[in-house]
Length: 341
Ligand code: NAD
Image 1 (cartoon, rainbow, N blue to C red):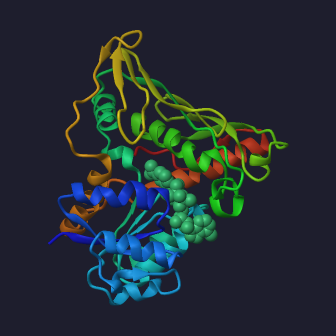
Image 2: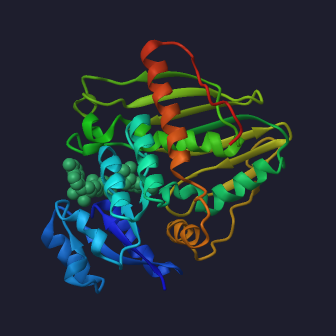
């Protein structure tokens, strides 16, 4: 049988992006919804043929324990709620797929990993790019050494954040600004393109604090990662311009993706000195979202760890905390975990 997912949070990502993807999954199906809006939850459940007993509020969430239709909980809530709902899901005996960023602190990530371990449940992070054809192919080429030794990676991600009332601009709910949202893609790209863990980070921030959108969180943040091989990654995120780009420079050539990490229509080139060959993989009809949903099911069935497990989210949060610290203190922060991924 297909394993059943409960979607927690019927906002943009959970409702508009993820729920329609179950139709394309081989091993996953929608089994329940969890929402603070009862009318919306009932409407979504009815539209997908779910029974009344598969509709939960945040208050009744823990009763998912008694629902055998639910195997996995997919958390699509604001960042500061990820830890609480992951831990409650694990305690209810369910596996967890949690959206990025994994949480808003290293301490929360560690508590989430511990809760899932104690309950013997899988924990995966919604790092969809590991299932996106351009990124998968770029990783393969980079790791195979096709471009020679990797010397430099650049990655910039951002969009124009217009609405000052959004939770993404509220420090308590988002945990931070553009770094916690789009910067995670730049950071991930630096790590999965090099296959290395950084040994040092140097960051600086630029935010107009008189702008009503940026009273609590940063707009632009720019950081450099140093890797054990000598490779350097120059990364950036912002909430005041649209950008979506990854560039890897090896000793024999480059790989470039732009747009790099969108939901669809990403593009990719290789070349000795520029965008010489369009090597965008042909669309397979299988989306990154369906790939991600089915991957966790396969891991549950085979006992394997997800390729983007809680440990992977924790690694990123350790670096995120160092990026903020470096920007705040105006100095390079050395990282303890400079080991191969
Ligand atoms: P959203 O604002 O559209 O949805 C958030 C949902 O959480 C809403 O249904 C809202 O009602 C609910 N919610 C519950 N308590 C809340 C509270 N106290 N304040 C605000 N909302 C509350 O946000 P979204 O864009 O769907 O993002 C949700 C999560 O998904 C975030 O962690 C985000 O980083 C992640 N996300 C991931 C991707 C991706 O490509 N992987 C894309 C978008 C969002």
